[in-house]
Amino acid sequence: MSSIHATGQYHRTSVAGEQVRAFVPNPLPRKTVVDLSGSTGFLLGQAAEAVARLDGVASVLPDPLIFLYSFVRKEAQLSSQIEGTQSSLSELLAYESAEAPGVPMDDVLEVANYVAALEHGVARIRGGFPLSNRLLREIHSILLRSGRGAASLPGEFRRSQNWIGGTRPGNAHFVPAPIQEVMPCMGDLELFLHQTKGELPPLVVAAMAHVQFETIHPFLDGNGRVGRLLITLLLTERGVLREPLLYLSLWLKSHRDVYYQKLDGVRIDGNWQGWFEFFLEGVRESAASAVQTAQRLLKLFDQDQAKLQASGRIAGNVLRVHGELKRKVIVSVPGLSSELSLAAPTVNRALQKLVLHGIAREISGRKRGRQWAYSDYLQILSEGTEPYSN
Image 1 (cartoon, rainbow, N blue to C red):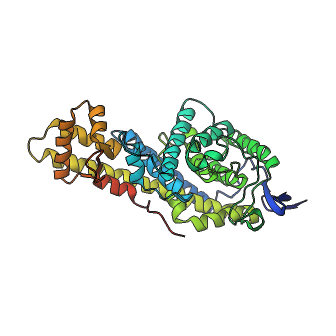
Image 2: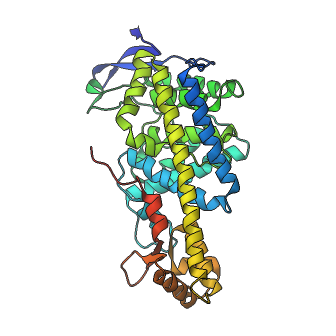
Image 3: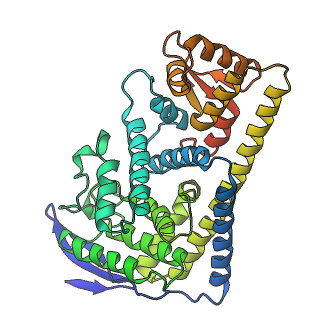
């Protein structure tokens, strides 16, 4: 038994002895679902311009990889935080430092997996592989390959019913499609992605695809993270971004209640315009924020280098260690020694010079396995990443 709704149908199904209404979305139309000649179209133009400015900034950066490294990790931490992890950005960066001692917490490991999943997706797309269900499953497999999600069928679409909100399907806020509908729904989403190339603006496709993916909820776990990755990977595949520097997790974290309301508005009332306006505003603000952050970091790097050069005769090794801090944010002496082919005493002297100038600080508090952070850089990156309370 089913009931017709604005953008899909509710199917009555039994889960663990309970009768529930599971939502099966209609196939996405191969044309825009809102009028782009009015205010929504104006907002689309603003969002596209903001993304273009971000792409332009990336093209003139002296070393785009510096910013890509830090932006990806901030996004990984934020996206995982939305799902309930409590690790900090500094913990992730410390974990990635080659000599970080101890076994990482599950939270940190989950964020590290997110970084690996995104990097895998970007590499596949740059290698000519299409954005497809196969690629989404590959990303999911990496995302959940270890940590708490390892038992949730990494790389496979779900074979049991899931739900969103509530303690069981019977009192859930939303119950996605029954398992027999997952493959047909995801197959149609894949067709939508392929058939809209060159037919719809990429931001329109991203907005529609994200809602559809989140509505299908094809995996047992990790749907939110894959759904957010889908946006960035799609814009990269369509050539909107040369580097994957646009991320919406901070925006969604700050507006999470409205985000869920807008998703429900599409499913229940077919209110695509409300979703588009929210999504495009998020893209515009996120792109503008990323540009501002890149500019602040460039200014910081230039000021600190000038500070070092103005302090009198400065060893070239100090500038080299400063350069490596720009790349990694948190470093260790053994890691720097290996990366720069410098003796440990030389690295230690350079770090002490950077500490003296207020550029670096020791953060581990240990006598062995010590780690240093680029203080102001880490502070800028950490803005907005504080765990929130319900």
